[in-house]
Image (cartoon, rainbow, N blue to C red):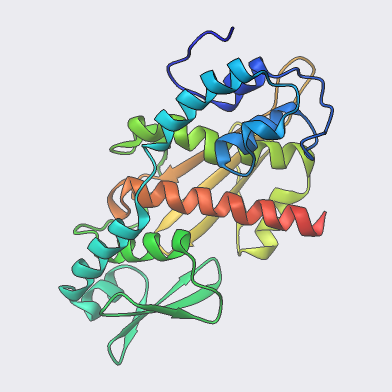
Length: 268
């Protein structure tokens, strides 16, 4: 019988699994399966060894955590309303974008997106919610700061403590698993998304990306060493806490991880 837990994480699921790495779930091992369950890519039924009792106990906690997820449709509707009141030219100039003929053009990871005053968005690439909501949120935030060069963790961002468990399980942990399985992934991200390897972090590799002009994020990965497990942490420039709503910051990072998973699936 599983002992109830207050916050469900991949490790809490992993503890209940058989830990045989049988691969019958079509993943490399039990930890990868636990991460996929938290991320929504797998269900508990995909594990043939879980008892009905443990499934039911885990499901209670999964449902509890899912209530934290942002309601994207309602959130985007509110952003559309805010867009209508914006001084488009002033906002573009302040936030590292450009403005012409009533349209703001903004670059995200090397791709250009064009935003109308209604909030409708166009791009040469497919518009998906994890890109749409953060871009609109970035443009609609009342205050804005330039990049400071000072780094903070997700929990240090206003509202981040409430989202910390979800952020860890949906963003940092699955990205760590990807880095464990594909040692070249973070270096390839530098080339694919105009990133930059930096020093000054206690990590084997630290990569800075700009998902939005004034939203620098740093992916810091430390490989396993003897009895010490690998670890990956995501840091944010201090300006991010002003420039993007915490829900959109979470959505942006979770979306990036999903994109990296697809890259790993098709290119390694």
